[in-house]
Length: 165
Image (tube, rainbow, N blue to C red; front, side):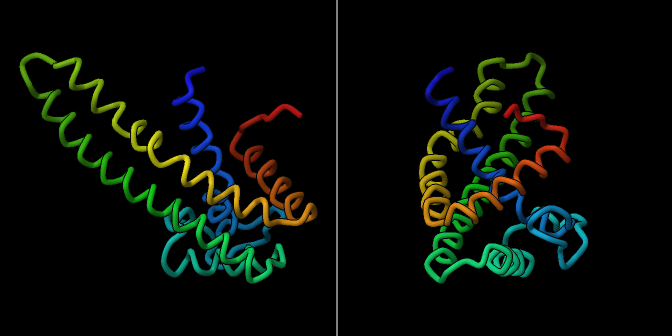
């Protein structure tokens, strides 16, 4: 596997660990407990009103210290920035792809460039996101890490992912 692919995959996994916690928070269940809003289309949003409740809930469930909360806030900020950037890129790519599809001949090189543009953003930004998540995870006690691990395992199982142990 290429180094860039590993970085992108690591970014996706890291985002799933913390970003997915917001979804579980709003949908309830698992070690992170029931949510405030019962899911819906805001379930995965880690920003604004819902995001602040998620951070408060996670902080309470894991009994985070002030330093750990600061680390969590930093990781969530990095993930929000990356999400915003990839959304902007996807919108631009979609518009350009539609134009390519309407052209008499599909420019395969340009189409490939559009498809891989989000991967390039992940390659560039994933290291800082992973570093922020690692900083947060490294600040956790073994018990807190176990809670996060249990939640992650339950969350992935509920989505149909089977992680070998």
